[in-house]
Length: 414
Ligand SMILES: [Zn+2]
Image 1: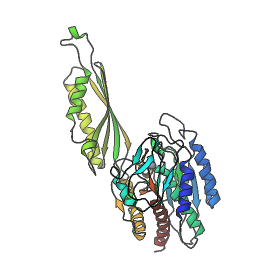
Image 2: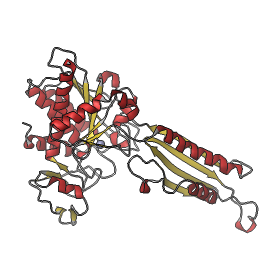
Image 3: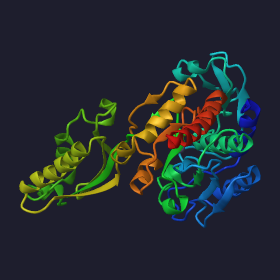
Image 4: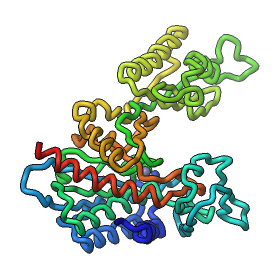
């Protein structure tokens, strides 16, 4: 059995090390303090008996649990990230364990009156009677994604201590800087050497994800002409009015606040304007590749159309792809999702398969040649003071990892 005590102890040993990443830094890892946990993790992997434990100059950690069977089994991997989000401080995390949660308000911080309440966070009620780990209300918790690391290390330790569970080669990868979008950038897929992998970086128990957005960013620049307002007739071109025309020409209901599920959107997230120049920043998101391309085309056509109304080019657009839907890479090897789903069902976990309205490291890795769906790690309310994780969900995720390893070896026999 994987004990609650062992999981709690391991998890707390990780979250009490500050590993906040920094988008303004150009180095990898983006913050030197991520090395603190990286070194500790490498040591721990060696201590529990993992082989080929390496930590590269960018702080990517890899390790192998060798096969314990004679037949050929595909090599699978499990990946999580050890940095925490720069959205909220991760220094001096003081985790608190709440046994047998009663379903009522949790006073995270009496002094500042910070309450974690099921009135606002209904998901809490799923975990009545369970053991929760919460913050003291002044920091994030870091379950994103130190819950994932806890689960992977615990699963490897369990498999090492239980050689009667048969499995093929298993690879483990821990990355820095996922929260600033660079977790996969320097991941050496070839060195990792897995046929496929799973990121343990989802939220609620049961989550299993292999579809995410196609994503692009667009910068729209409008050039006006400034003239003294008293003498402006027929001369002034106010870039802000042209920008407004652009904004109003895109469908108002195809925006994040009006869409869900598979619906895509245009999201205007910044406007900076003066008469002379206005810059609009958009992100474009769609699960469907054809719709995604059409959205980019709509913005390009609108730009061209507005320019025809003027004697010179007043508006330019720069569209850059950011990441793509991993479905394209995972669907041809759909059995890797099916195995995860089967593992969950065998463990009495109801699989929650749904499209991600965002991206994951797994989507980038899938395009780098490592198909990589995402599995729940158990935490909720990521990137803020209300973050919490049920210990029972972490135990289940650990069991899912072991079961996937076992099923992969079993299926390779047939
Ligand atoms: Zn994460």
